[in-house]
Amino acid sequence: MTLPASRPLYLLAFIVCVLLLAAAYYMELVMGLLPCPLCIVQRFAILLIGLVCLAAVLHNPQPRANRRRSLATRFYGAGVVLLSIFGGATASRQIWLQHQPADQLPSCLPSLDYMIDVLPVVEMLTLLFSGTADCAKVTWTFLGLSIAECTLLAFIALGLFGLVQLLRRQD
Image 1 (cartoon, rainbow, N blue to C red):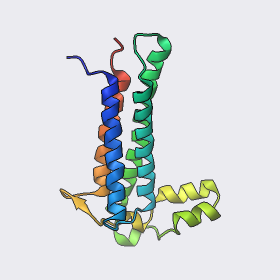
Image 2: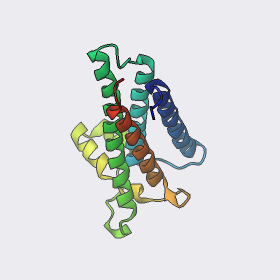
Image 3: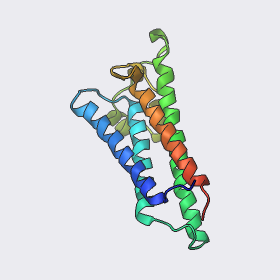
């Protein structure tokens, strides 16, 4: 069985990323669910994956043309895999926080705008990735899964897609 061409698959992955971001902004702006710092990092990872997929669609490297284009096809797959691992790790951290007792959670952080304005970059990123009690709140579920658990499933699916693209035979 042969796989379809990469371009339509990357387009489909890009559309999935756009839909995930649209759902996140719908939950924020319409439903009133404010994102925690880890949610913002996950959105950023989805955005980057979407941009890699869009670049692959626009570039459309031909695997047989020459060695350079073959490396380009692998680059896009590797980019999706690496960004999915990053996003999945962030979602996993949030899921871990959601399953901790309330008395063992870190205290709340100042707003992201305040941290960007006041803190050094390294300290801000350390605080951002550590998560807070805000990250442990489960305010909405779908089929019994929290938003972070749904997002982790999306990162796993996107990572598997990227892995297939990375390892597919270059005919």
